[in-house]
Structures are given as C-alpha cells and as structure tokens.
Amino acid sequence: MNKKGVTIGVIVIAVIAGIAASVSSPSETMNLDMERSHGTISTAMGSPILGDPSAPVTIVEFGDYQCHQCYNWFHNTKPAIMEDYIETGKANLVFVDMAFLGRDSSPAAQATYCAEDQKMYWEYHDVLYTYQESKIDGGWANSERLKAFATSLGLDMDLFESCLDSGKYSKRVQYNTQQARDHGVRGTPGFFVVGSEGQQQLGGAQPFSVFKQVLDSMI
Amino acid sequence: MTSVINLVFLNPKYLVLSLIIFSSMLIGLLILSEYIFLEPYVVSHLPSGTEFGFILIVTISALSALVLPMNIFRINILKKSKQKMGGGIVGSFIGAAAGACSCGPIGFAVISTFGSVGATATAFLTNYEIPIRIIAIGILVLTYFTTVKSLKIECKFDPNS
Image (cartoon, each protein chain N blue to C red):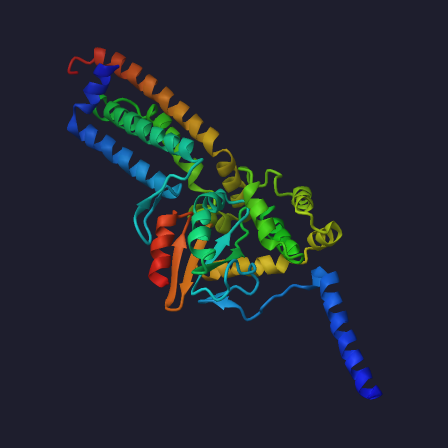
C-alpha cells in the first residue's frame, strides 16, 4: 500500500514538475520538427504552421522582412488568402526566410524566432510587415527597433534580448535562405503552393486571383 | 513645337519606332516592377499604395518614346552630331534602372554576383526609386525642349526641310 502510494506520488510530482518546467522556461520550447517538409522543401527551420496543420494544401512563402514587394503581398493579397483558405482550413502557410536584401534582413528574421521562443512568432512577423519602412537598411529594423517591437508585444525582454544579441538563430536563417536558393527562388516574395499531387511555384507579389486559381486546382 | 512633332512623327518610320519604344519600355518596366506577371498566368495588378510608381513608369515610357525618335530623326535626316542623343538615353536608362533592382530577380542576381557592393547599389536604387525616376523625367523633359529648339533652328537653315 505504502509502496504503491509512494510510486503514484513520485509520478504525480514528476508530471507536475515537467509541466512547470515547460511553462516557466519558454526559451526552451523550440518545438522544431526536424523532419518537417512540404513537397521538396525542408521547412523544418521555417516558421510555425499558420492555420490547420492537416490542411490539404500548404503555401510556402520565401520572404525578406525588408522587401517592399513582400510588404505589398502581406497587405494586398494575404488578407484574402487568410479569410478564404487559411481560416477555413483549406490551406495553411509556412514562412521561410530568404534574408538577402541588406544587413538588417537577417537580424529581423532571427528576431521572429526569438519571438517564437515565447510563442509569438506570427504576432512578431505581422508587426515587422506592418511597420516596415521603405528604405532598406534605413534603421527601421536595427537592433533597437527590433527590441522595441518585442516590447510592444509584451515579450519577456531579458529572454528576447539575450536571444537576439547572441545570434542564436543566425544559422537557422542561413539554412532557410539556402533552401530558397536550392529551390530556384530568384527574388522575394517567392511561393510554392504544395498539394498532394505536386507543387506549383509562383514568383513575386502576385494578386489573390492567381493564388485562388492555383489553390482551387489543388484542393 | 507642334510643327516639330509633326515633322518627325508624320514620317511613319519614326511613329512606329516611337510605338515600339513606348510599348517595350512600358511592358518591360511593368514586369520588372511587378505590375504585370507572366507566369503561371498573364495578369496585371495595381496594388494599393503603388499608383504613383505606376504613373512615373508610364511617364518615363511616354517621354522616352517622344525624345528618342526625335533625336534619331535629327541624326539621320539632318546628319547632326550624336551628342544630344545622350540626354534621352541617360534619362531612359536611369528611369528604367531605378525600379529594376529591389527584391526581384534582377536585384537578387546583382546581389548574388557582386556581394555587398551589389547589395549597396540595389539598396540605393530601391530606396531612392521615386526621386531617381523624377530626376529621369526631368532629364527627358529637358532633352525634349533642347531637341525641339535644335530642330527649329536646324530646319530653318536647311533648304531641303
């Protein structure tokens, strides 16, 4: 009786300790699925999946946070895709960095993963494309501004700053940029729409009508 | 001014040349600036906030189509020097280069080939795209007026004109 009670007690304490550890240290919850791929593209180092992970079609977006065409796509095309395909479970989206435009491109991409450590990847991603300014390396995405964006989202700044300053995700961004090059992406934004029967590449900030035709043919 | 335009463009050869310059520059720049896409479907698209850039492209194409044939006419028909052709070519080239780089395939190729120097050049052409295009329009307008003035003077003294 006593032995059984002690065993149950140890299991309960271990479970509680495990949950407490995972809640109290968000920087450890990287949650990377190293095997994750969509079509021929390894998206293991990319963003979390936006939308239903079991959706029949995935849109893989290669982008740079300093690219104004990515800004155009984010504001002009993405909202309709969100409404008609992602929120309805017909498609999901993964963002993969192609940080090539300027010296602030890679730190901006790294900052999104520092936000992901605190489960705020997409919120931070949206903030960058909302507050993007027209000048490449004009200072809008320098270290101070990236930290200010994190503050505005209410992130734990000690964790965020140590993550960003250490360059923890530098290699992750490099890996993603190499994925873009390996798949023949020659500019941002670049897209692959991946379905069960293959994948279709789309170059540039194409309008919703093009995505609709491609997506509807794959669903 | 109208008589000079008539003098050049009543010749069908120069009218065709003008139309070719206008359409090729317009379509080329609209593709580079992602107003027109060719794959997977041919589609045109004017995103909100990019209207001014579109107007500048149309203006540069129209001015190039006006200025370049006039200068070619001047060189061919009046056998004048090629020096004044420079303004038209420079204006057209600057106007075209301003929007060609950015995050598209040309910008990517320039950065991949020339590294940090290419990135700096691309960033400059992207950051100052609108002012550069306005300067290009200024050069083309200036070239237009100097060409018209030259043609007026030169034709006056040419007994065959």
